[in-house]
Image (cartoon, rainbow, N blue to C red; front, side, top):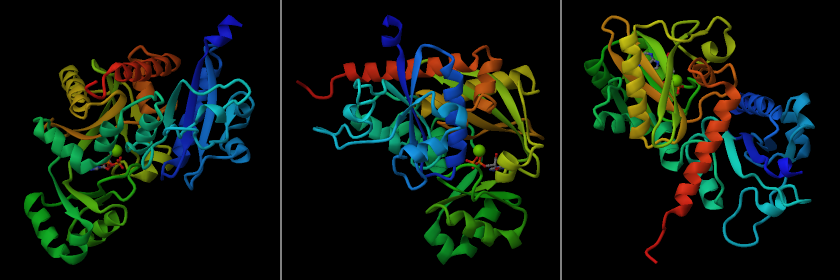
Amino acid sequence: MAATSKKIRLGVLFGGRSGEHDVSLVSAASVMEALLDHEEFEIIAIGLTRAGGLADEDELRAMLPGGLRDRVRLCTSIEAAGSGMRVLPNPPAIGRENGVMPEIIFPLLHGTYGEDGTVQGLFEIADIPYVGCGVLASAVAMDKDVVKRLWAGEGLPVTPWITARAGDIAANPAEIRRMAEKAFGYPMFSKPANLGSSVGVHKIHDETEFYDALRDSARYDRKVLIEKGIDAREIECAILGNDDPKASVTGEVLPAGEFYDYEAKYVRKESRLEIPANIDGEKAEEIRTLAVRAFRAIDGAGLARVDFFLEKETGEILINEINTMPGFTPISMYSKLWASSGVPFPDLVRRLIGLGKQRFEEKSARKTDRR
Ligand SMILES: Nc1ncnc2c1ncn2[C@@H]1O[C@H](COP(=O)(O)OP(=O)(O)O)[C@@H](O)[C@H]1O
Ligand SMILES: [Mg+2]
């Protein structure tokens, strides 16, 4: 009995209103699978539908692989909170029989409404500890324009870019084309500022492709980045920690196809990860140092994966982006980088939970007014 009372009640939140809904289901299932064999966890599954609502029992069961459905607690109701703003899984709603509520939530949500600070804000209001980056770091990392300004301000190397508003793209595309051609020449890339999974990302080979690419990127966001096309190897590095973040070994993505587009990420089997990356030791060290600096610059917490371009011709390193909730299955780059750095998957999850709790406790101990 004593042992069960010590169990960590981990809420795993997944699904949601994002283009990466399905990726989230896979991440969540693998985290739950990996933890179920460990006595210390009691897992509470919380599913969000594609429409953004809390999944009911049938929906939640359908979101979970068969083997999991009966081994986790299903959280399927949220009742209006009695007082204050404790809106997300509030105590009476979960495990009513014995008042069980998650001690900490792992938001395995990727992309919009999950990785962008919005759900983190909800946790803050509800006073619930959670795994990973806070509101600001999540939001900043999600906006490729803002994060690059922040990094550039810190003197960190980023791919040269121009940001265009959707309105300007519609009103004055020729002007934008002239500007981009003058700044970079071809090839260029266009991408929505806030998205992921390469959705809306285009390689622009010449001027005939320019307008269509920009228009498509602008379908996804008010802001579109136009970047210099870098002929580069793609190297990634995983970060773990709060105030003293550590960098993993580096890994390389070898995409099937011309660049790491949606197909190459999720459909084509020929895409490969190589861990550790086959690059020289000094470059790897430089990348690891930059990854930590990139993480600190956004005031990250818990985890992130920092993605780099290593320019083939010059050996120059550029930070491409940071993902505050990277793909998190045991075979994802993030977890494999840590496994290869001596932190196996269950330990990784345990550490992340510890970091989330530590951050919450530190914050709770801090004064919020002058009394
Ligand atoms: N400036 C660039 N130069 C070369 N390749 C790029 C550039 N920008 C993006 N790419 C390619 O497109 C992929 C997706 O772009 P990225 O900015 O990482 O967006 P996402 O958030 O969708 O992953 C990258 O992994 C890379 O293959
Ligand atoms: Mg990317």
